[in-house]
Image 1 (cartoon, rainbow over the protein chains, first blue to last red):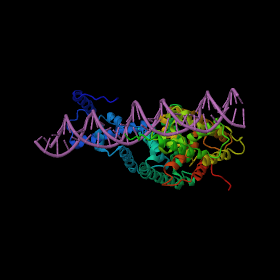
Image 2 (image 1 turned 90 degrees about the vertical axis):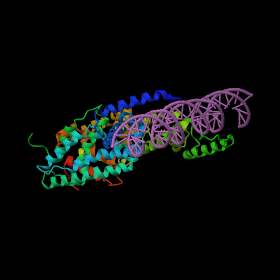
Image 3 (image 1 turned 120 degrees about the horizontal axis):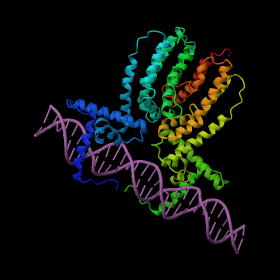
Image 4 (image 1 turned 30 degrees about the vertical axis):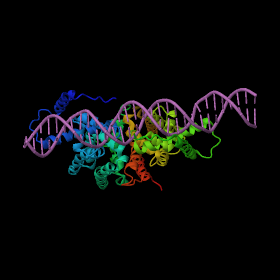
Length: 231
Length: 231
DNA sequence: TGACTATGACTGACCAGTCAGTCATCATCT
DNA sequence: AGATGATGACTGACTGGTCAGTCATAGTCA
């Protein structure tokens, strides 16, 4: 009963309007090859899906909403993705791969280990904590158990690499005498734990008690490296 | 069309069987008053719901499954809870309240601050990390943004109290000279971060790389209090 | 024009929530 | 004590609505 039969007569105008507004998002891009257009649409779908999945979680997200937000018809989604599930999986891959690429392009180890770690933390603060990317991390924590393939991918590409990198950094710090606690190299998790907590805190409790993540990370690094002497 | 008319004749035996098996779970408890029975059923529903929500998340959980697991008809659930949503909210309250009660029954501050914190960590390790309770924490992180009331409740009852308690402990440690880092009292999050990470790690990555949470917490405490001298 | 792409109405499965009916338990009367 | 009626806990088939996925049709580009 909710479904209106929708006379064929009203159909055509509707379609035209819908299309016009959909196009509005790309806008003024006449020199697009078919392939380029397709890629743009795919990107729009990925963005929209990310937004919706973060806001509602996998199960509660409607493909109709993703389509509307992307300015695309529902059927179009199925030209790019097999089904909802594999869309979610590919989405995570698509968003995470560039981050991993960035991490691999590590700045060459110059200066003290503390400076390195601090640069890292600064980056994380700017690029992850309190951003869409941070929400994605929370989403992975949320959906991980129901998407082993996503959890596996995330572990393989991000967690294990990140841990290895941090461990190397810690070992360097120990060798140079900047870090006292020898066993820390066994648990790089301790180094990154406050950063992860900050990510989660921002999306759950920022409303109740805003957290100065930057200052917290500073204190944490003081704890590990010893208090900073000058400024 | 899918629904079979189900002859009335087959109905009666079915009912009897269903009831028998349902009763089987309580079993050999003839001395139950109406009220007692009702409480037991409610508890069974809460347990079953917890299990299902943890395994599938809120949106993907079917009330039919909860009912089946609890050995109860679907309608019975609605005698105890208004709807799915408020069932979830009450579930979280029901499970968390006893934990809070336990925390309020703090052991009197005897011995060093490190011993106190260590006892605390030991408890957390045993009672939360790698248990259903730990999974519940992950569930709250997962569903929090879609259930502000749950996030609020959790913040009010657990997080803010926990933070206050930890802060007091840290200040005591600083006053007694056990803790160097003065600013730590501003961020009790740093103290508990590795414990939270352990909870999340266990439910996401234990399969790939099991984590010795106990040892990790030991290292973390060494970091804060300085290396243990004896033993 | 012909191949390819996009559309959105439609279908079928699925599921939260309802409610008419059943029956164990309890209260009251004889 | 035993019989009779009242109560409300419990049941599960059913309803109304939702939504993933399909496909006939329409549009677009080379």
